[in-house]
Image (cartoon, rainbow, N blue to C red; front, side, top):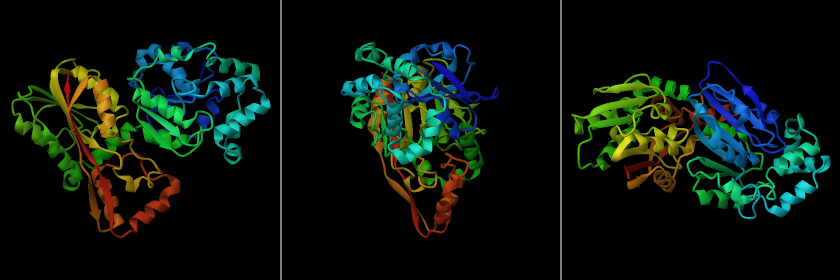
Length: 467
């Protein structure tokens, strides 16, 4: 295995670790833009699956993994021995499975065998064309796909790593971990891994699937923009909107109050943790109902919630929750925050550790379809909202029983597109990018010139009990 630093700074605290596909080195990933605050490293060449290349990596607060094609199976095998100092917090699979050669869950064995036995310079170019989905796209990517190839013998050796003769399907499945994979992206036009086989594989594990048009080589810029959070930007956006949030965020305020209305507890919680209190709408509701409770808050924004007293921890909740004492809290609340997390699944796992037995967690978030009107403005990018079924699967994985789950549908109406854009600015809810992608300024201008328009929200309320 080999590792190449695409982007590296001694000041960054987060790592994006990309596992490339077979026969594709780091050059492909030099063409993409990455969020601020991340080192970026690319892994390729799976002749021998070994974690030796990670031995000298420094500590990171958080690591996000994007694994593509055969990189998915490779990381699935390696993840259990990944250095703990990397603090893996999110794993995304792209057009691959943990059973790489399988008639039902991966590449059919006869196709894999034919590719291996017939591999040559000519057939490799044909394979690359299929990766790209055709000749036109291949012309745009061929230089990135062929810059640093090993010879055919080396590529055969790498491919044999995944051969069922060397590693039967059962060997790969021993590394299966339902707590590993956060999402799986599947291209509907993939000519390497059959899309139906990939759906079968991920449905068996219960991993949420995001399907999109495209080839085996997907739109990686879209995937990066969708799953890798610029946490500093999110904090900045919500800091800047703090003074105007409560006046304009009517849906979010309703969601916070509705969450408290759905909450019930036989005994008053003594220790309460709130994630993402913002300006304090939910905080004040909690303090009013439980005036004797000791409150702790975690927020990316720099100011503590107004109107109540407690302990404020400034920073990334996904990181901080791993540093708090186990079985300490009676209740955890979070209104309109967890959709910004890299891994809601791992958050639930860590939250379960913090709660006493029988403790509860109450969340309000948003379901798929939320803010779909502004997806185009963000270059097709939106938060990967989870459905109620996906949340319940993650809750069960984390050791929770679902007490209540409820979805609402609402839409804000504006007299003009300018009014909609002003709402986004004053509530901070469009913190995915600093500005629209350069090729979408025209879309923003069109939005600003519109007449009446709407903004869709689908609030989702979840109350879970630790078993």
